[in-house]
Length: 403
Image (cartoon, rainbow, N blue to C red):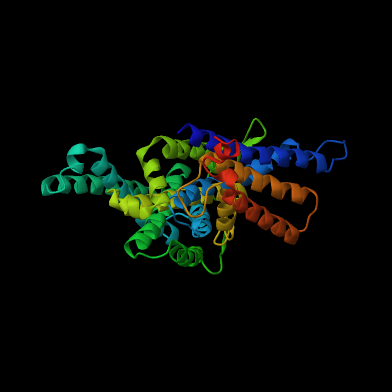
């Protein structure tokens, strides 16, 4: 136990040491403005970096859970794009349309499943009374009432435009529904996550384009005219440097960092990713936990769609194209192995920051985009290589010291 803890501490420190070195390089090579100030350290530049890494960071948190459980999710960029389209249309278009209909159906379904899951696992009586039809019937009725109540709330608002707080729920739950669908197909169909989420990536992007409309691929948001000014709250800067999306990133990191390190669900994810066959033989509900990780990934990705729409004042059907690769890269750089069973949210945070600041440093120094992609690819290869070295294995320090 002690050796494992020491090794994990070293591994996490390794990635943050790399981040510190990268920041030092950024300061040294940064250009200066007309007044001699370091552009890299300027408040405007740092806030821009924090805003960009926060969006990728929230998606990467969900991706971390999926990869730890032995999966992969290539649909996160498309779900984010769909989320931005739904946000823009729900905020700017009154009444029934493709966005309101799709969002209502998907979010209502998630409310039903969520309440049903909480009722089953939250009550010892319900959880242990699988043969009691009356108890199961009451559970279903409770879930139906909650789902219909949410649907009624949305429908009563639909003659007009939905308020921002309700849009947040509808869009996030829609993403959750798509994640559940991914997980269900993977587990029930016994299919490879790569294939399923690749197909989902294409299908969801097509759905976003159908909902958006061929002639109106971009839906602009003008706060105070075609949308309420509430959307500006998601664009605000705290202390003139910390963007609001960074709070979402921090909140997601704290919540799911706690989930992985302090809850039974987190322990089960490591067990499933480490050896799924043994986890099944041990009696773990592997399929349910896998579906849960994809549901969380979808929810966080759609939530980023809301943040994107607020930041750029638009919803775009291909806004998140390629984001899934950035998220996977950040997770891998942060030490989470692609084979599953190992990884930490703290490492993902470091990976996200390394990836974000690297891109910023290259941009400030006018490095062309092709070279940027080349350097990022090299860093990913190096990160994976380091994970395979003895330094990343438990007990390396004992062997090196003869212990």
